[in-house]
Image 1 (tube, rainbow, N blue to C red):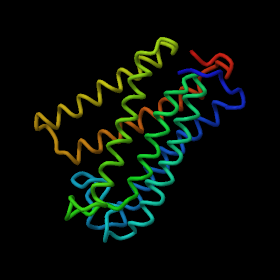
Image 2: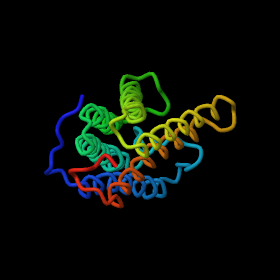
Image 3: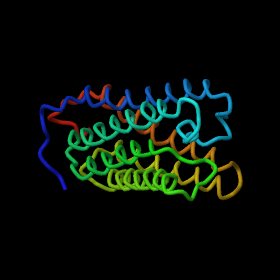
Image 4: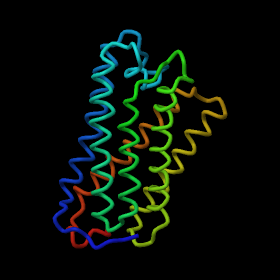
Length: 206
């Protein structure tokens, strides 16, 4: 599903959205992680920072999940339109919304409560949309080879991170961080690609 490009979308503005989402998330993770003495950067789920009963949970959920999720949603939609792939934009936008809804506080002691389930469902559905978007980027021949290769390489790395957990090389919290790193890594690299490309918005298939 492709629509004509909207020339008012500036690739530098789209890149700024992507970089902002990455920078704000990393800053929130470090800042609130340091403030929470019970949080382990290596052994705890990131969601613990926004879990029920945790210090500053409401602020981490607001900044780390809602603000970042909205930025990811707008970035994803704009990125899809910028490279003339409306379906991709919708999928990436849905991922951002799913990320924002992970602000529903997880109960770390009772994972089967309705709010905990809602938190898990939100991130799972959002990640599923991101993976479908990645798949579309990888196989859709309207996109430039480097965009497709980057999408396929990202998918391979993601699968390897899952295999590492299944094989017992690292724990689920570590896998959780790897997945976040892969998602935000792709966002940062794709944003940088928009900035360094010499193509204009009228010729952005590079």
